[in-house]
Image 1 (cartoon, helix red, strand yellow):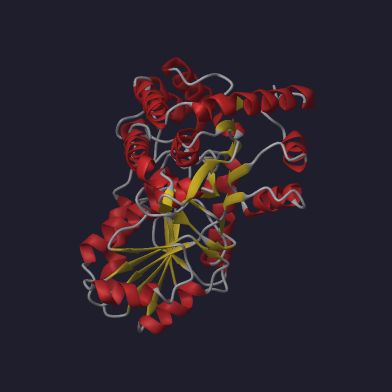
Image 2 (cartoon, one colour):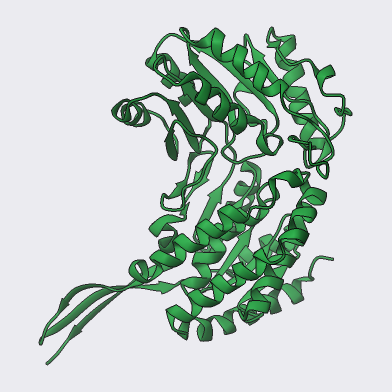
Length: 441
């Protein structure tokens, strides 16, 4: 059951009191405890993998999210000392001048269900290492994830009041934000959810980190490695039933490669097996909810009615039950007049369009209210950077997709949101600068 208003306020009050003592601990001790918490989580892998399949449908054959969780934790822990160290301007007999990084206080994480561990870890790890206390509210679809994280970190020695997992309804969440209960709010979810967060925080000056919708494009140039492009972009479109923040939702292919790309993509997708996520043979599980699948079905049907051509026969995926189990689909003869090419689908459907040159591809990639990642397929670094500089997005990838590098800032623009996590800038999001100007007289 969600906490009452009074219980929620009391939880935040405990977090605020506990934060001071936590921040006073040596950095090395905080790092060790956070890494121990992640190590304890790894020990729960058998249960976690099963629970993820039950909660949001990811096939157990793919394991949990431990590879990314561990890599991100190790990287952020490894750069913490250097990133959080004071920047000394002068240290002389007359003056000591420096800029320090100081924990913000209480960090509030509102996490999504699609990658429930990874998205939480992105902020949880740097926030705790930097000396903040954390209050986590997980999505109702994946409440067990919050419980597992809290269990792991508490058993590893992180104080219970320093990291709290809570269940809150929308009204209580918004009232806490409006009352300045938190010093930083990190939200991953829909554009509408992000707007609700901004409205709640209006006038409080509470900083927000928002990762919202996406409609990430791939562009296959004439000089691309065709087989690699097909394999990576189709995986980026279909993995996790297309429920990836930076999943590929639309693809633009140079006319010289278009026919071959489409043919190979159809063969690739027809090799998937939609089925029970607990079946080791299943490579595609159900979507997390029937209503999410309904959005994809509606977008697809609407596009077909407008002239799009479906290339995947649903009969090849008998597990499609008209509910959460949804057959993958590739659409051609698509245009930006169709919602499937402009609105977030967040499911196993992708549209492919033919383009004549870079300029046309760039214009189409930018014809979107979102900007998280873009995947460019070429054999030349300079070309990728030149094209990337013209694309309105947070991350440019060359010859890869649906990937997050912890050394690079995870950020977006336009309706995808604002702020950044991971990299050294991830520590800047959960700390503030404090200047020291010390003079001897």
